[in-house]
Image (cartoon, rainbow, N blue to C red):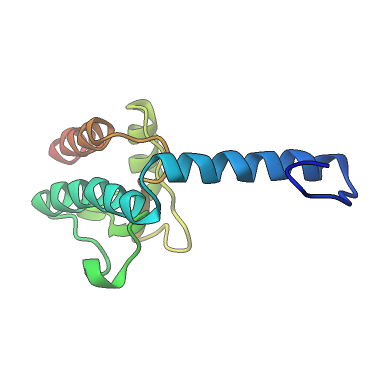
Length: 130
């Protein structure tokens, strides 16, 4: 029995419940889902504003998108794989999703800081200016 839960049929169930309990504790410690959402928006806004300044627009208006995952047009017709590889070399991973020929995705979910997002924007600046 774990915190009142009984009848676990697989060994992994206990681990799953422990992981969920830890995640909920971390969410509570972070001030709840509203605080976490606000934090993710702050990070994503840094990316959206930084990329917009480089003429790399987000595909959706802020009000129509997620605070943790946004899609952007590829800069200046640069192939996705080239952008991916250059960012990977700078310590970042982007995602293609279904639109690898025209777009890329950026996520700010997890243990990512404002400083990390600023470094991402700076890496993009270097790539676009070369």
